[in-house]
Length: 99
Image (cartoon, rainbow, N blue to C red; front, top):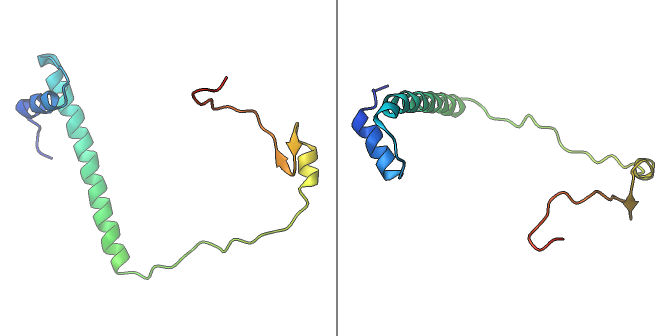
């Protein structure tokens, strides 16, 4: 991976509206190089996967869903609150306008 220059770091900071000082440039260069190296590795894995999948037979390994009928009452009897075959649970997400 090519080394990221000081000018490139400063340009990225400028277009991102981020203020950085001279001491941060080298640290950011190492951080960005690590991110780009990781992304490059992911691209290589994706290319390998695409090449492999083009040459192999693809099949579904998932099983079909099956419905198993059962009586919900024994489970609902254990719930602290239930109504019309449903569990009643406390509200945990408040929306604007809720009390």
